[in-house]
Image (cartoon, rainbow over all chains, first blue to last red; front, side, top):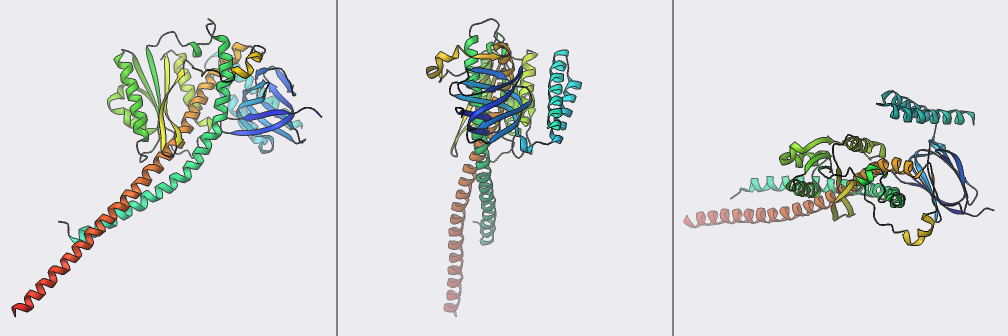
Length: 135
Length: 295
C-alpha cells in the first residue's frame, strides 16, 4: 500500500476535491506526469486534459480540467484549474463546444503569437476528444 | 392639521412600504447565504494562487527579466481605477462608500498631477462617479441579470485590463471593492492589481529550505508569465464575489432598519389617529350636550 498524501483540486468557483490520495496523474504542458507521496517540490502548468486521482480508500476521481497549474510541495499537492468538471458530468457535446470555441479563437486571433497559442489549445482538445471516443 | 382620512391613507401607505422592505430583507437574506458561500468557496483558489505566485515572485526580485506585470512599467503617471459596485441600489451606504473611496483616491492622484482613468463595473458605481468624474471614465461594464457570477463571466474584465496594460494605456491599476466581513460590516477596500504586490510569505518558516529545490515545468519565467495575467482575472473575480456578498449583507441591514423605521412610524401615526378621533367624538358630544341644554 502506497503512502497517502493530501490532494486538493480547486477551481475559481469552489473546492472540488480535498482528499487523501496515493496517486495523482496530471496532464502537464510538457507531458503527463504522476505524483506519489514524497514527490520533490514541483510546479507545472497544465494543458486541457484529465486529472486522475486514486484516493486512499481505493476510489477513483477523474476530472476534466482546462488551464491552470499543479503545485506539489512537501505539505501536499494542489491543482488549480481554471475550469474543472467531474468526468461523470462530461459528455461529448461539451468537448465539441469547447472545440468550437477554440476554433473561433484561432479565427479571431489578432497576431501570429495568439493564433499559435489558440491552435495549440485546439489540437490538445481534439486529441482529448479522440481519447474519450476511444475509451 | 391632517384630517382623519389623510391619516388613514398615510398609515395604509406606510404599511405597504413596510411590506415591501420586509420582503426585500427576506430576499436579501436568502441571497446573502448563497453569495457568502460563493465568496468563501472562491477564497481557497485565490489564496493558493497568491502563495504560489509569492514564492515564484520572490525568486525574481530585483531581476531585470522579471515580467512587466510584476515590476510595472517603471512609471506611475497614469492610474487606472477599477471600481466594482452593485447593479442595484437600496442597499444602504454600500455603493456610495465604495464610490467615495474611489473618489478620494482619484482626488489624491489628481492633486499630485497624475492622470486618472476609471473603469466601472456595475451600474451604480457608474452613476455615482459620472458626475464630477465623467471625463475620466473610459469604460463601464455591467453584469446585469446574472444569477450567480461564474469565473467565465468576469474573464473579459481581466482581459480588458490586460489589453489596456499591454497597450500601455496605464501604469498602475487599483481595484476597489467592499470586503465582506459580516452582515453589518463591509469594508471598502483598495487593492493594487498591477504591478502585482504579494503579501509577505507566511509559509517561509516551515518551507524555506525546500523553496530553493522547487522544480518548474516549463521554466520559471514561462510559468510566471502565464500566471500573472491569470492572477489579475482571479483577483477581479474574487473581488466581485466579495462584493456580491457585501451587497446582499448591506441590503439586508438597510432593509431591516427600514422595516423597523416603518413600524415606528405606523405606531406614531396610529396614536395620532386615535387621539384625533377621540377629540372629534368629544367635540361632537359637547355640541350635542350644549344644544340640549340650550333648549
